[in-house]
Image (tube, rainbow, N blue to C red):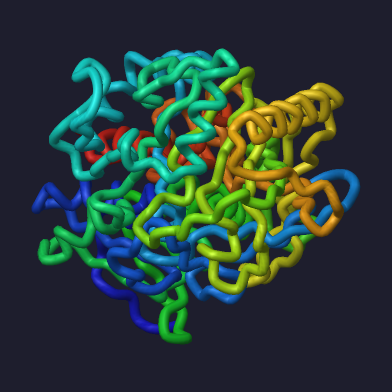
Length: 482
């Protein structure tokens, strides 16, 4: 093991959508030394919104083996492995959780409590100023009505004709209906939290960013975290810190905790990992949005612009989200062979719950993600209803003809919105992993700030809500919110 580098006040593990926020905000105090470690590279830089640099052979993602259902459907869950995380390589979807979603969170996370943090993070010139900020790091834009792709425009017309309300701002507290997707983008270019929060401040003398540096396990002395063991350039060293903010994502965070001896005692013992703290909720009962897509052959196929969002509009109705993608996946994801148009149907409040299971005591071996999708009869009924609605809207829109033969079918899949694997709750709750300030219960000095802490998955994609959580946790960590 090589000699340790200088001590740091705040060590941020994971430079994804949450970690870049924590490091950027904490290092604004020149007296606070901040170190961020990220296993992936520096990043892609500004990228065209409509092209996703995350094909099957991309080196910018973690690949986690996954079982989608009890039927044994297998998949690979891909999460960003790059400075900026999944927000550096995604389609730009940046829709907030609704006010009703937060009624399922602790009382201190009510919509009134989180709204100032949503407003602080964004610069969104559109909509009611009661809901939006105009001075935050993250630009939020939407595709204008006159600029919509023909598929998107036809879908909106079909949905409104079927009685669904048009909503110009899906980031209002309880917006439902059809409308343009808020995007973490500017002028057709994707903007990650690395771009918005971190890169502009790399010149700060109190901020160190170490890419290609993988956290192996946390280092604890008694009941207090004092740093982390990391691998860098083939060497292992310990980075010591007063405070550790764990932002490795909803799979990476529980995986790192378990390899540090914090997690379900039985599972750790079976894997041969010494138990430091028995927290049964680590990796347990996570949620994600299952998705099935309706394939179609376009009647007319206008070219897809690289600066155009893959998803410009969505329909939110009856706990379903319908997603009319603007191009075949084969056109926007390198290495994917899929020539069909697609309308995605996702369950936004599924009843199924999953778990993250260790496969080895070796921390370099990824865990198994068991989703258990559609294990509830009501989920299957709702998915069938969503596919029927997608067919009706496709027929009404006229931009494509549904493909019914097996070659056009895309079976059960995941939205890759996994959350809740280290859920927030009361310290008296044996399943809770963090308290309502996102401090790990039973470990001093250790915080979690990513999608894993969500006690209930939002009924919208989680990216915007993850950034909000990180904004708030940054204030807890730095003492701005006592």
